[in-house]
Structures are given as C-alpha cells and as structure tokens.
Length: 273
Image (tube, rainbow, N blue to C red; front, side, top):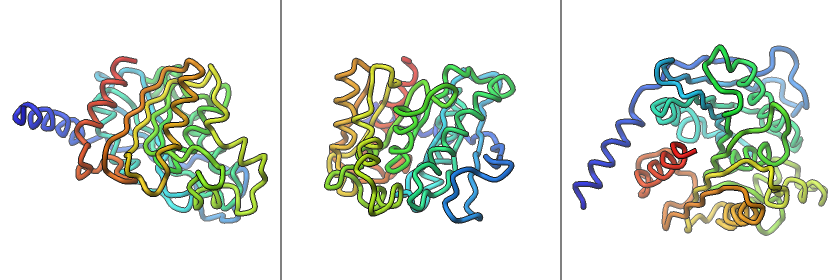
C-alpha cells in the first residue's frame, strides 16, 4: 500500500513539475482602468500559460490568487499551478487583480475582463470559449464565486474551482479582513447580502469543485460547506473535499499533508467533466 502511494505521488509530482510554457504577460487594461481604487500604480495583469498545441484540450481556467483583498499570493495560489494545468492540456491564466480598497467593483471588473479576454482570444490560443472556468483561493475564492454567481454573458465561467474560499460577507461568519477590504468596514447590509455568494446560487450557477481543511482557523469551513449545500439544493453538480488537517492557505505547496490526494481529487474531477 505504501509503495502504491509513493508511486502515485511520484506520478502527480511529475505532472506538477513539468515546466509550464513561458507566460504571455499582458496588461488587462490598455487605457484607464474602470472603478478606481485610488491607487493608479495598482495595475491589473494576466499571465497566460498555454499548453502545447498538441496537448491542448481547449479548456482554460482563470486563476484568482488569495490574500484577503489586501495582497496576492501570486505563486503558490497562482503561477505555481500552471504546470499542473498545462500537463492536463488546460490553459492557465493567472490574474493579478487590483485591490478593492473598499470599492468592490474593482476586482470584479478585473475578473470579468480576464474572462472576456480569454474568450476573445480563444481561437488564437486554441481554447474552447464554452469551456473557460474560474478558480480562486481564500479571498480569491470569493472573487471566483462572485463571478460564478453574478456575471453573465462572456464573463460567466463554465465551471469553478474553489480552495478554502471566503463565501459569505455576513459578519460573524465572514473573514472580516476580506470583508472590510472588499466593501469597507461600514458596508451596507444590502451589499453584504448581495455578495454572500451562497445566497446567490441558482440552478444556472456553474458546476463546482471545492476543497478546504476541517481545521481552518482563518476562514470558517462553513463558508465552503454552505456554498456546496446551496449548489446541491439547486441541483448544480458539485464536489466537496474536506481534508482533516492543513489549516489555511496551502495552495499547491507540497508540504500540505494531503497534497497528493488533493491533486488526484482535482484531476479526477477535471477529467470526468
């Protein structure tokens, strides 16, 4: 059994370790960005990692790193995922979105623009515009689930992948720092309700894969679990994985105790879609 586990780990690590193609780096906004956060030096970018044309499946995923809407964990929750996805023939588009500084429209507009950019370049990048998903970790999971539940048209994703996500904005259950940075300390009750994404699920919400740790002390596990329950209640296909340990913020770091299992769980879900 131990030998089998080690072999599986070696196979998965080999997939993660495959070097991704050198990314295409683009400024998301060529002119003035909309919805100012008061910091003109805070620019939105995308880093586009494409699989080889031979291995491309047509699928793509826009990745929103976390960081409490105050900073971005661009590596272990962003760029370091590129090799894993490229090895599966999936294009990985890592989004450096602007911080809201209390203006919630700022990161939303960046994420929607990234979705539209990928679909507009679908033919050139060998992507199926109907198979572009979104992924997010922690506060990035809130942004990704916001796009999944609120956005329409070319900004709407085909699927969502969420790691230990912030979902609710209700005080007492939310991650307070993410709440305050996203919509301000004196947020309106209406905004708190509208961007508690478990309350925004409908039968048209895209399928979801959700992973978190039972011992997460930063973002209450109830965030991801309640989101799953609402997806289930609305007959939206979803897969929930609660690992017994790991805390918060592990991303694709190999020192996460359940790293190998997590990668296999995600791979299995992606391949059966």
